[in-house]
Image (cartoon, rainbow, N blue to C red):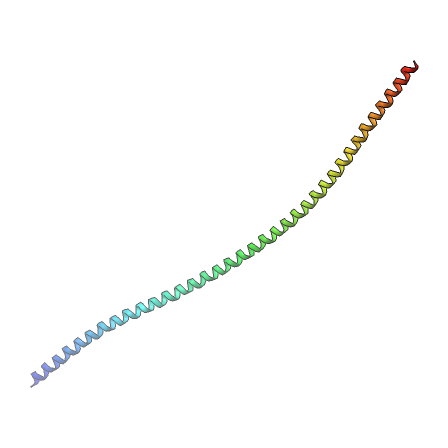
Length: 133
């Protein structure tokens, strides 16, 4: 009777040992899955952190470029203003040069006319002297 009872306990022990072993395997699988999920969660958090940093860097880069573009626009407007002023000065200088050229032409014309008058007077005087002489 004791042997039967011992045999029953052995079978029960073997059965429990098998269940224990099966549960241990399932526990190991669950632990692996939990570890994978934890690793995935950590990766997601790490990637989200990197994404946030990159987004901030991009925003900073855009702000810097916008600032540079505004500076370039301002400098371009200044150059345009300087060019306009320079063109006005050039136009004024061109007008002054034109006036001086006209005045010079007029003076040269006057000089030519005076020389021609002087030559006529000299010829007339010479002719009169020759007639008298």
